[in-house]
Amino acid sequence: MTDPRMAAVIHVIDDDEAVRESLAFLLATAGHTVQTHASARHFLDAGMPAADPSMSCIITDVRMPDMTGIDLLQHLQEKGSSVPVIVVTGHGDVPLAVEAMKLGAADFLEKPFDDVAILDTVKSALARREKAYQHDALRDQVAERIAALSQRERQVLECLVAGQANKTIAYELGISPRTVEVYRANVMTKMKAQSLSELVRMALLAGLSPKAALG
Image (cartoon, rainbow, N blue to C red; front, side):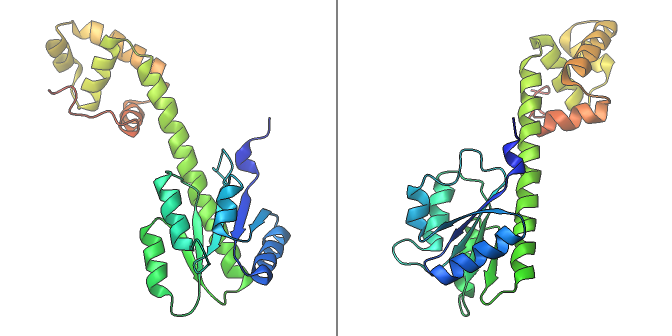
């Protein structure tokens, strides 16, 4: 099966057909798969973005009839979308650009922009999204590993994340230091951690609080 992240889809939204087609041609020439939309409403009605948006990107004009680029950003934010959005603004639209950034836009470009600028901006947006995708995937994997630990293994993990030594853990849990070593080895194996520092980083990534074992 092809990894959906390998096929980046750039959605171009602009009510100006000439701008829309020009951007689509430039992006397609650079090797991207492009879909064009005459309005933000058309984009949403088409069921976009795709179910797996990990390597998708939206380029939208900020000033459009019916539903503006700002309206689209607000809608995507409400839906919890993580698709990077690049907003295209005209001269004098700096306040709108700032508002767009506050709503989560990945970047903005002022018209007229050159080919290199738009391609570099798209590349950066996709790279940041891919990094976030990998981070989220790793966090989910770590959470699954933590869920597979026994109650005692989870307690030992929490103590380790809290910075406690084996003897302290043994005292708090009412078990022998040797037993702590066994549980610790089991935790390392199940978490697929090569070192204690890696184990701690993984636990923190999954949101395990270092304070959990101290309460």
